[in-house]
Image (cartoon, rainbow, N blue to C red):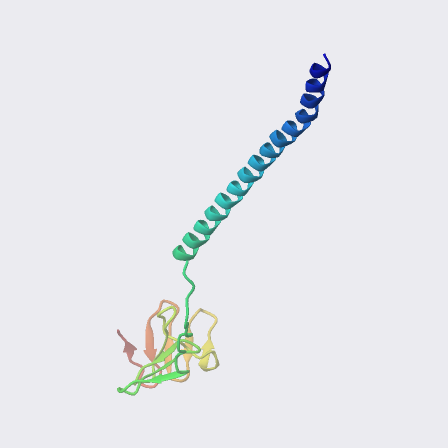
Length: 143
């Protein structure tokens, strides 16, 4: 009987050791699973960053576009003012390149009550109906 008690005492002494081994195995398995999960997440993040960089490459050696000269002169005597977008023809006529309409210097225009106006630079009278007349010769201008 003494032997039976001794073997029960020995078994009860080894039980905590087995429990500790079992618990340590579970902790190690949990730590391994956490490490594997972190490694998989890091790999996925790295792949996504690489894909984003591939889809949106950064430009290198970017040079600003050269600006136009303030005035460009043409062979026929005309010029183009790039700051105010005014095209001056060789005969002196000016056009607004944004709208395509003739450009009139407001300082050279006399406006009349009926809607007509006189352009004193070229001596052209424009009637309210759009008809134009040369004020020096009195001739009607047709385009």
